[in-house]
Length: 76
Image 1 (cartoon, rainbow, N blue to C red):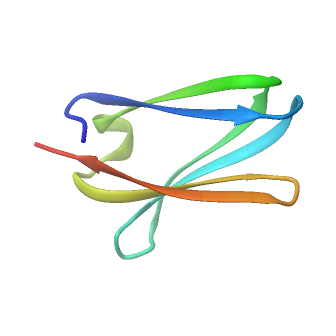
Image 2 (image 1 turned 90 degrees about the horizontal axis):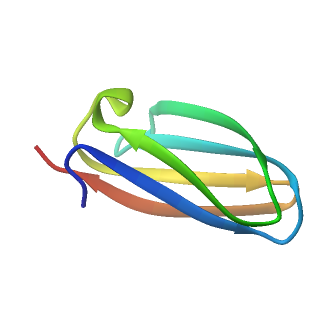
């Protein structure tokens, strides 16, 4: 859970482009970031104001054939 901002960390086996999409619980797209990711650990910071919502949200990272989804919670 986070209050003001959160950081999404992800590992990349090689440098590549990736798309990080954030959805609310209804499946509505809240935010999309196209990322030029480096090999190794990458981080993206999101503020509550950028997301414009609180509660449970999901984020999906897509790069090539790889897709991963995880959950985050924004609290008031």
